[in-house]
Length: 413
Image 1 (cartoon, rainbow, N blue to C red):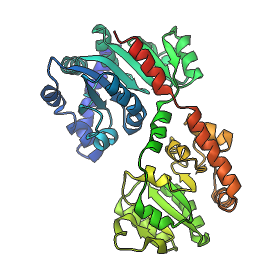
Image 2: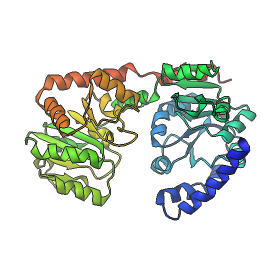
Image 3: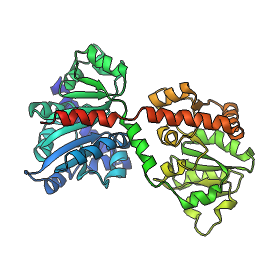
């Protein structure tokens, strides 16, 4: 099976080179891997002690960040090596402050795995949430390098738990320990005979709670809000915006809206702005404007949505009309804000839990959106009650990083 896997991988590596001619994202994927070994050779010498973290993309990076920060504290003499599989992770966080070396993960060939480990020679390895690369894992096992899965989540539909999944089940043997998010993941691993598993919870809760310790102030948002009830619309897609624009256009003047679209391409921003009949200002045009005069603020930049949520009275989190579903709801939740989302949220445990707890409201159409938002606007008690549910939910689920670090520090020798 390894032979067939490696043959298919070689074919795939040639295919992506062709596709890179037509796709900017795939071009980044291919070109970004060309200088990985040169970068490692320049930044790591044979005397360095290293710890390797692998994240598939941006979400996994954010998920692993609390553990990376604590590992850096506990092992100050080690260099942190961070790898990404996806351009959407690497290109955004290639200049992150936590890792000493950040590179793409070379494709999972046996030669790449051997070469990568030769240069990195890690003492500890952490895979975040998922991604199981058989050649890398096989080489780690051969070298007796301690390897951990953190914030892992397993589902019955995964190949590990199917009759044909023996190849991937073998890959799991590499891990010294599994830190999983929930009881069902633990039981699934135990059904395969693994007892080296512990429910740690989701490190994303530790990540979002740390946001509260930072300075989240934005003077221009405070000026725009001007002590007015404000709805923050985060990571919206056109299907979200079609409903939201209708609500905004008929909303009372005593409610303000901040929209941070998922896609900030000029054409899409212009199209969104053209549909709104209320007074609207863009982030890129805010200078020398009296922001208190506007009712809608469109954020045509990235990187400040988290801070903007701290000014919200109500949050709408987009993505719930697409696949796989709603974007990150934990950031507004940690600020104690009631949340509204679209119908596709069941793929995310935290969204499912908060909908069931009634801190988050799921809507499927214009009428349901109008009712949900109007009820939250007009009833301050309900708004505060649902916000409190969200805040309490986050606070009750922190601590995964502590569970992981206690185990690592007690078993690092």
